[in-house]
Image (cartoon, rainbow, N blue to C red; front, side, top):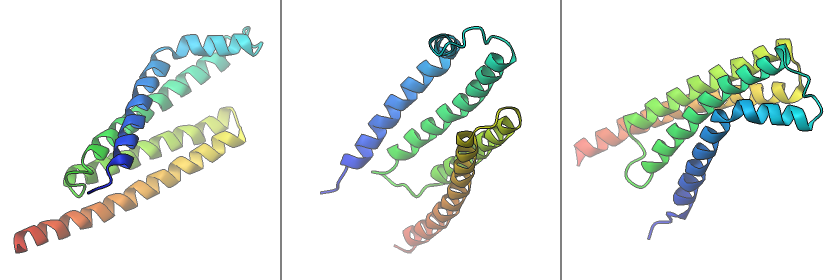
Length: 151
């Protein structure tokens, strides 16, 4: 009997994260205004508010795309994970991680925080990791197809 608990749990967590992410991105203007209000920065309405709003939207949309790609990849675990669609998904994940990493590093120019630097570096590592995994999955697809033809 296969252990399917972990993939099912992961898929459930990713689906909840996807729904919550959509809600957060859609309600971001209200949430940011509320956050600025409760922190006592409600008079902060100019460049800073708009900059943070645009940055969070530009980071949130690729983040949702990443979660969606992961949901599609997790679905293939029980069938056959070594398929070309997963290789393409991993490459898309790498490019999305790189794009968001560039956004974080660009944010450092205008608003430097250590956490922004750490997030940018972590996302760049995710990009490299996804590219490496895509190469690994690509090799596995080739080996699997060769074995399928042999049998």
